[in-house]
Image 1 (tube, one colour):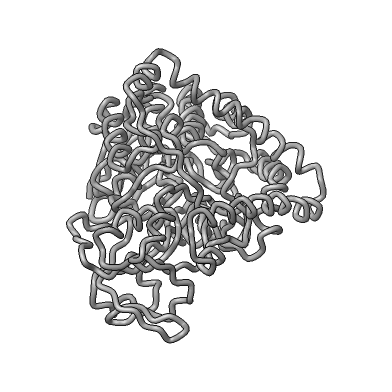
Image 2 (cartoon, rainbow, N blue to C red):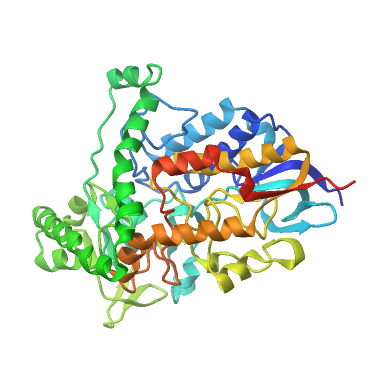
Length: 510
């Protein structure tokens, strides 16, 4: 069996993988490979092709900092336009020559004798890599539809947002949509006019806010194409976020946690009042309005942006079901009150395994020196990371999306920060002629304690003020590990100037 060797293996070809490859090339590192389980670049934007798909962050910010696009069709473009942009950037950077598709990495195992990683690939020879950059992303695996009791007995069609059949015709079909997250809120307005009926099964209501989407004119395109304008727009937005982040991470944590958990929900009462007025303007039925009001804070779960969902819900062919699902039957869905409704199509929009959940990490998937297992460590000692990317038990390895890693900015800018840090340390390792770089245990512990202090307000709000809530921001263990409690300026500084003294560099053995 032939073992290919590379200096760096990048796992994943979504926005993070593209960004990591860009920074590796800028650092003069050319001997790398991008290992992707799909067949092309794009990540979630490649996998998701469901009707109505669009981005929920203004595209002036949702793009690569090193490859800005001035001629977006809309402020919130559709999924196909985003994916075309991903592909075009990868092509312009000539990344296809590093790309290996349909290549699923099942295990990463450190070989201490050779001081490198052995990546075990499904159906292919292992890849030996001196460094690994895990760019899998935040949505690691779609939760299987089989988790819904009886779904395998259903005689009709089951579609998931990330495995949509673009040739399926909804015309005249009775459709059930399970979930009220972002995917569902986009799918329902896109299909209800063709379907005979659409019934939405809601377990937890979402905050659904108006989406200020507009077409971008040629004049706007020309303005954004001027040198520096795109960077200025993005920089201005980041600067505007700096003061709130300073307040959240540096001022509020000075107050007692119990006080924060008591006072911060008062902010949500204002928002609930505003939201009820929004619903009164858009939903006539008082019972449905009541069911749509969330009982948790507006910032405790990611709000959904849509200006088309409520008009769709007002159509006679669309209805909301709030009774819990008992099971799926051969012909449809039976709810806890005994009612069985027939369907030809069930849309299972039940979410993803997230990077903040310990269950997402499988025992034996990432194994470092002396049998250190990342999944076991996460379960035993808690989910932590240094700078949102490194772990002391895993030499020469970084994750672009790790616990307490996300800085509150658009995704491309976030992964640019973690990729910069990883490549910067890799380049320093090369400059020193060292074989291994590993974050020091004491530096890691100091960082974890610092994040705990600065994350007090975030945790008090998402966990204490909203008990029992399960969201992107609160994992299955009741911990708030999505955000990195750090200011924008602090995160930018760390990615470029953090001390190399926080790492140990082991010389090449002779």
